[in-house]
Image 1 (tube, helix red, strand yellow):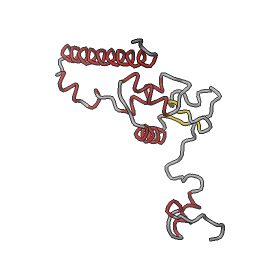
Image 2 (cartoon, one colour):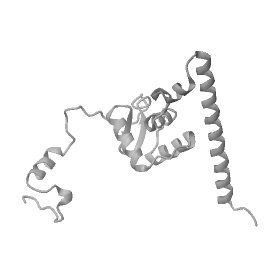
Image 3 (tube, one colour):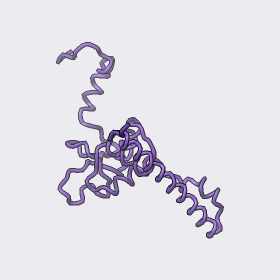
Image 4 (cartoon, helix red, strand yellow):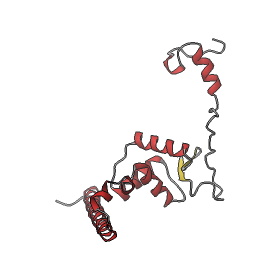
Length: 165
């Protein structure tokens, strides 16, 4: 029976994942050895929050490596390839939104491209997200508040809206 291209890719993907896992294991061992040399306990170093990388840190790391940025789907792929971690689209969206609010990443709305703040607006001719001030409200927010004050919010109103009603 001959191997299809899909089978080959799946097998190779498994091999790469195994290599990444082995490298991550080796990295943990090296960090433990370094901690031992420095006189700190390896167990304590592994439990310390600073030694654990968060999803947000992973996202920023892959975007820092790519000045051109990428869509959220690409960021998911990059995080998976680099860290062997699966992040759901919902989690990715919330992480990117929070990172954008904090000014760590930006979004080019025209292309849906996320970039690290390190690469945003650095004279590359690409638009970057405009930071929103804490006390400012998004466009159309006043109108939404007025509509909501009159009853149910639009997403609960099953009737099409008519001007003046």
